[in-house]
Image 1 (tube, rainbow, N blue to C red):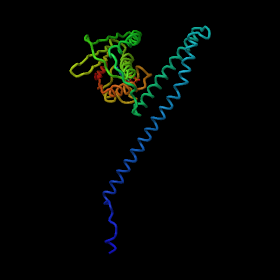
Image 2: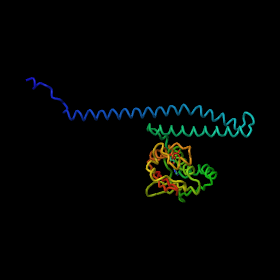
Image 3: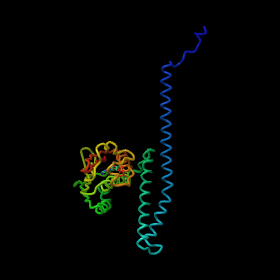
Image 4: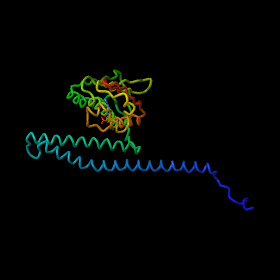
Length: 264
Ligand code: ADP
């Protein structure tokens, strides 16, 4: 009688075990996600707080350098220039961190507008040309001869991605040409962009990590001690958020070629 009324276990012991361990995994995952979110939020808040004093410092040093507060001797100018450049480096690092936390929060792209893609590149050529010249490099821009349609993009972010590719080619090259090539692939309804250099390339064993956060190649970090390893990760996210594809073809000691597409 008693047995008849005793409640049967709803879940079998084996099933219960699986359920417990599954929910443990679930809880663990939730915990990891929460920690990850807190870290992202922390980086974002810290970076925002750091930006304000840094921009105040920038303008003060700029005023001194422009001799608005009186003439400077050469030594004073040299030291202030170093302070200014270091401040700029810090701002660039903080901007990278802020971009990464926005990517992780899933709110990266701002308003999309219709833009003439070739004009976007052309408006930055003089800047890149100046940087190439100071390193004895040649910058070549190859563009389609025919009229091309406009692209729907977050203008600021697409320029940032282009900057990251071209600045890397400049940073990690000591000689040769840097070629920016744009092809309009009408049948595929997209632009294919190539950024090719004759720099140090990326060693074979390290190539699979090239678009990961904080990746720095062993040869590149020796040549340029300053990098953060965030530029290509940010560029990848920008291109993919525009439904584009991104890849690269490196050859150690022969240079690197980065590719990306942009749908029209
Ligand atoms: P950063 O340049 O700030 O270190 P990036 O994310 O832009 O960060 O690049 C990651 C790493 O990839 C670099 O540190 C460098 O080792 C390597 N790299 C990127 N672009 C090139 C390139 N054009 N040629 C050689 N190495 C490159």
